[in-house]
Length: 268
Ligand SMILES: Nc1ncnc2c1ncn2[C@@H]1O[C@H](COP(=O)(O)OP(=O)(O)OP(=O)(O)O)[C@@H](O)[C@H]1O
Ligand SMILES: [Mg+2]
Image 1 (cartoon, rainbow, N blue to C red):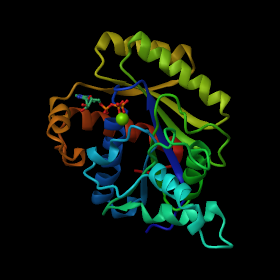
Image 2 (image 1 turned 180 degrees about the horizontal axis):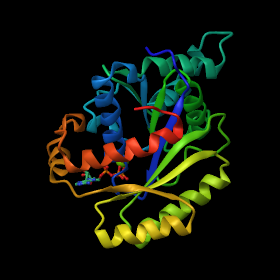
Image 3 (image 1 turned 30 degrees about the vertical axis):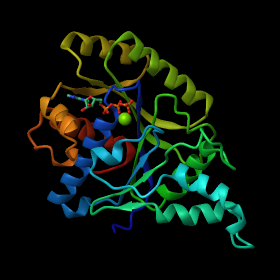
């Protein structure tokens, strides 16, 4: 416990399969490894998997008892069991604390999906509230968001301190980035800092991404090279936090984190 609790929120978005979860997992590893070298930089970290097609827990080797979607569904089925005098929201909040996976270096929550069966509430506004409330209890929250930012559909109390837009530099990838930025404006979420991150891009594509960022008044944070270790870990279902320190993708993420988190007031 550090006692800082400024509740910084770092989020990642981009087209499907572009490396969002990998990037965020390596951001987490950077923060954990830094704290191991310097205890004054130990942060309380929440990982929020806001992708309905959640796989962050698998990548980080975490067992998740249930998602927010699961418990809100269950609650809908058992509405009659809610004790009198307790609001549905409060009851749900209580349940949410029970499904937080508490790991040694971070906590994780999975939002899941309720769209299929419907729910008494909209998961979207629920997620916004959860991120608002939960993130207050942590120094840093890392949120894995799907490309549509579906879950951030109304003004949140909290700002998102950093949004990393991951792209492979292809036309559809850039189109997704444009769309995300448009949605971000529409949902009136205040993204204080937006960075473009290239993944598995050639030098030529990196140069055009930098140009794109400049033209659109965005910052280019850097690129991750293709890293066979990352792919091996993924295929073998190994915990990405255990990837060797000299992994090229990890080194790249480390320098991106070092370069960018200052803008969110985070010291590493
Ligand atoms: N730099 C890299 N080098 C090698 N493999 C990578 C790299 N980045 C990501 N991958 C691999 O690409 C695949 C997709 O990555 P990841 O799951 O992080 O993407 P995503 O954007 O989160 O996907 P989704 O939209 O499905 O959530 C994974 O198998 C991952 O291991
Ligand atoms: Mg993902």
